[in-house]
Amino acid sequence: MRVIYPPACLSCAEPVAEPGALCARCWRDTPFIHGLACDKCASPLPGDGGGEAGNERLLCDDCLRIARPWSRGRAVMVYDEAARRMVLGLKYHDRHDLARPAGRWLAQRVAPLVRPDTLVAPVPLHWWRLLRRRYNQSALLAAALAREIGRPHCPDLLLRRRFTGTQDGRTRAGRMRNLEGAIAPHRRRAGLLDGRHVLLVDDVMTSGATLAACAEACFAAGADDVDVAVLARVMRFEDG
Image (cartoon, rainbow, N blue to C red; front, side, top):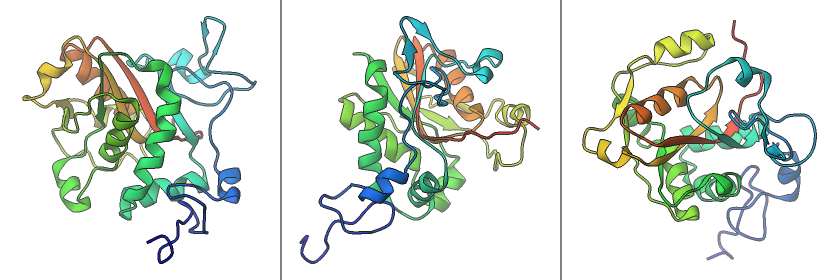
């Protein structure tokens, strides 16, 4: 089968040795996050090393002044043009083949956060958007991550109870207001949250408003702790 359909780069479609891989050029050009990063929102920080310095949790300037309801956050890459191609391919163009390698990348980033009681769940789509798109890209990522780390995955743990439209063009405060009361636990799944560690998964973090609404919904239903993981982190968000 590989003779007829040889493996292609996830980003540019150039031939590669194995399925689910990036070619050398795209690997070089993809802005994977290495070194120091904010422990809350995963923004890269100046310097080298892991996400912590000794026992000190490192926070960016935004996270020093903004209350994030989740405990820790991890991201695979910075959202630039190379990352954007992959995110949009997964989100709008049926590139389901991206989910498995993205799940591996996410698993490497979140390994220190995983607990025996970890439950993996995606950021939910409103039913109308899910009907039009036919799938939730965050659920694909969450399922792939759950397989990699060997933890249960609940794709409908949370529901988006009303259509919130696009967040584009809104300030951080506006994004938060737009999501007030919009996300809640699925009534048939709420019992899964009691006393559990939840790992929320999304494709992109911009202001963090959507993940904050999801984390608050988890805590309201009795979650013990919530961490977040995203494929890409937007670095230039203007609060306006």
